[in-house]
Image (cartoon, rainbow, N blue to C red):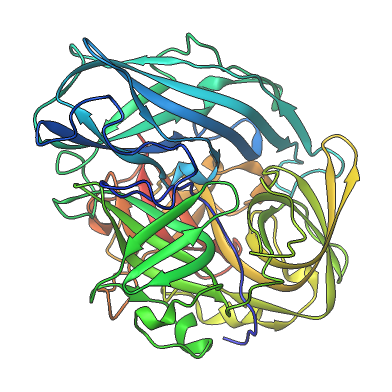
Length: 509
């Protein structure tokens, strides 16, 4: 892979958790005995993640970003004190179609909990219109709509959430995007978040052995592709993100280290993780609430300055060799002298200029990629980019340009192909290495004209090889036709032999 720099992404939120301390969390965050109990063996451990259900395929609009701030979450018991989870976190629900965001793990008194109250605010949707069958958004149609704050209450079914002494429980709160939006003629006209948001819009998934996935019986959820600035202490690797706090995971002998470790001159071991790198981490939430470092992928060499990265989705087919347009999904902010605002404005349209001799690369993370992936490496023109691709950009200049939505003008000297999140209906069953989407069920701005789009799956065994993660199915052979699946995947274009290379596959509920 010909590259001198790498990129950023941050897809999930985070706050580092320890079941005996609040170290590394935002000031004031409580992760232990938040319900006011004794903090002893009678407490249960509750770990919570957040997911999103995509628009029903085929979607009738093209959502580029759905940004939402979770101010916090509280569990209400039948008797006793309310238990609070940390916040705030800002998430992009487009990413959470395939990924999970970590909301924290807390010790709570045993008992019955009747409901959960979720504080939601700063909602914004960035979308566009398209010409059917033509890749990319129609020029001038990228629009942003803003929603208000709400604190909907989710009532637990079947008499409530019952927690026994010393129980280790995991839940994922799931927001149905389509049921919180009003769409008229493919335009999003309202974001509908109210205190009476029905349970059909807000539901839960019980994590652990009762939930089908490729995780082991003592693991709850994948908190994958967490990107930010790195610090290291022994086997503890900490990722500090731009908008979502800090998350610390523990490496062991089974942790997978991506080929970028070798490319950047580091060992294939925890020594690959260096302070002040920008890196992506795949993390697994364990049943006891601790975090395991499943995979580590350095995106840049260590640098205390000039390590600003923005990740976003390409929205138009580029017509200039030196300029293209994205909608931002995330960012990594330098530890000092940053050019970027914090918190970073997810969902913002950005006009990107290529610096002279800008380097392009593919963050393969060791996945099985098509042989022609090298077409995306080296000193290239912006016209190599395709609508729907997600790229990470090393930022050398940044300015706000005004307008509605507020635009940004940035310059980059490094462009890294990263993971697109997409949902659609499977046209085939999984055969161990692939399955296919029905193109007519995928978002229109991809401009698909062929009937099916192939998804490549990787069956490696960490720590020696990368592997595709599965949620809702146990592996590639359990993927079935006519089901809706969300993937986190590298997108190489509809006419490539393998258009999508999946790092994650989720069966949507």
